[in-house]
Length: 432
Image (cartoon, rainbow, N blue to C red):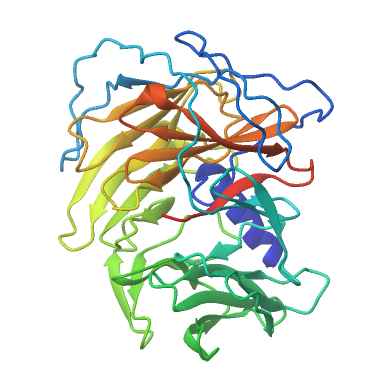
């Protein structure tokens, strides 16, 4: 059963990228790094003093471009109308400038965790017993805790690490640990344990101060409930998740973290592929359509559901292709995503198009990035108005910051050696 679970989650991780890294081709680490070329002209770089961690001289900085999209502005309707095309407007050519003061950023590096400091220097984070080659590692919103499953050759358990005190602990479990989600106030976490032999599962809440662990949900065989996020509204969970089937999840629930009581917030009669809750827990970004396993071709749609009113706003009508990299801004006002249209080549070179929508956006924005899709790891929000971009650049990986209101201000935050071929990089945590 565990093997089937990972197969299903890997499919979702390839689709999403919100916590999961983008796919990457094999790269000869000895080859000379190739810098992406700007589509609107080359940038002028200034010399910079190397940080305590050795890094190459800063090269030219690529150019990002914002252009108007032909996607209609979101509206609560089931059939959007096409907007008239708007001419593409090139962004100004950026000049390199030192990264502003930034707080810690935690990266998964395949076989280790990496912390990026405010000056761009990096250091490795050691967590005893932690299985680092997994997407199940989580960092608390305040950055004080790291949690994940233990190494597969050890006894089953949950590994905890306090980044402020250095405290480490392994809490034994009687099955596979997964789906770790910290509370919005960093006081507790929720996770699942499934037992291959007994075909049973449990959802636990763990209070970090007392280490008290108690069951919120449990069952035998399938289906099971899987937590998506612990928001101020409660724990948002997928309902009806079943292994060994081609069907998607059915229904979405809100779980009371104190009592474990369930409340349905999306009917199991409304099929979908996956959903991403907003940080405030008031909205769901919902991907509909079909994954396309087997003989069926993939299709997708994208909508936003307001959980209080139940009103759904259609963003992308159902069409051939897929959508990935769904990421909400910290204030839940903007949604970043990447459509993969049928017939398009995701392995092609730049530009790579992403779209930003939301109540704060009067018309959807299309962001053209000068990085090939297979080189760009995980676009993530640095703040409410800026993105973080982790990009493979030959034997190096580079972390960029991009203000969404100033496409010419793309700047490099840090660079470091690329991850080993056995691992892939992803942004796990951003201190806001």
